Image 1: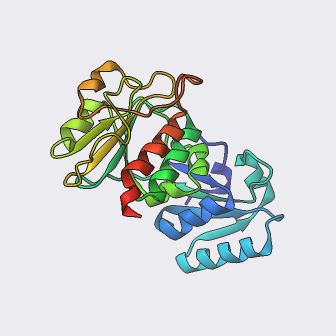
Image 2: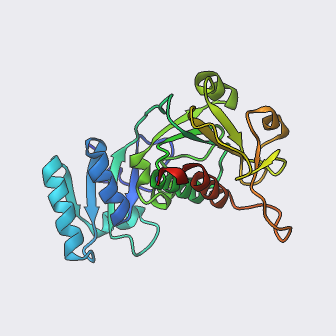
Image 3: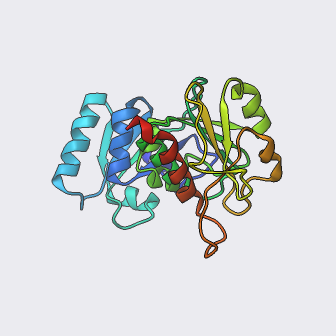
Length: 245
């Protein structure tokens, strides 16, 4: 059990992290109650927030504390009136399911938004190629609105490691400004799971990815040089999953 004196600003080396905000905290409680250490509520929280937290904590035998100073030690915004303390966890992505692959992502907000988009369109497996942002950083968890607790994720030291383990019998689609075909201009292979591959926010994917599967271009006007990573991923995820809905 993590004591109150252990509650401090997030540190990547710690074995635990936080959900900052009521919505991601409830997502944590509803999807991963077994990893929750405690729930903290601020005295300014609405009664319905407290009542829901109390009910979920009682159901799962989780400690619930009302402690303003404790919450204020870790929250980044004044409107954060609830937080969860949870143990970091490991999981593996599923071999025969569709994947999103992020190569060296560096922005917490982008990663969180992409996680939420993945969950919203039924892609429940995220591969992350290192070096990369820490998926357990509270900024990622908050940007995902707790969708982190609805998907599988796995880190890989290199794309080659990911490809070696999951590349067989899989359609690969690296998204690049030099992509050989425009998104929407080619037929998808519905008989194989796919991987949608995206590069770093600043540099994208290097030219070596032109030889990986079918490289794809999201066409846009010359008014911009490129799309934001989370926006590009959202467009691609929608295009590849729209036939499911």
